[in-house]
Length: 162
Image (cartoon, rainbow, N blue to C red; front, side, top):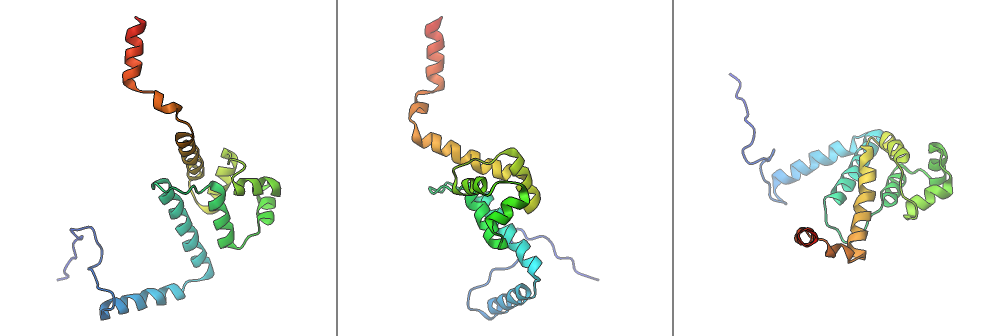
């Protein structure tokens, strides 16, 4: 009778291994061998997936350094070894407009977010969310006027108006 392996109770799929042990070295060797046997297309997909996760992680972090839509697009183009001018022509954008997007001078629009989403197999909202995240952070840190608003002040204002 075949023994069934149950799901791990602590959420890990493998047992812990100490670095430098024989088990770790064997595991590392297997991973490296698998990695080297990937095709160029598989490697590109892994790299693009890694960049997608970096974008998602950025949205879920509280990093002090702003990373724009253009920053991530530039990384993707570099990973794909595609020149900005070629990319701009492919998606029907003026090279100068793409350059402004990459430098952060121009915001992304929904049409371009849909194109990028389709090209790189990302949810188009990821691009929009990065832009919105940055804009909200800029506003929150640039102007103190938002500190004047509170629920207590609103209620008091309403009571005084009556």
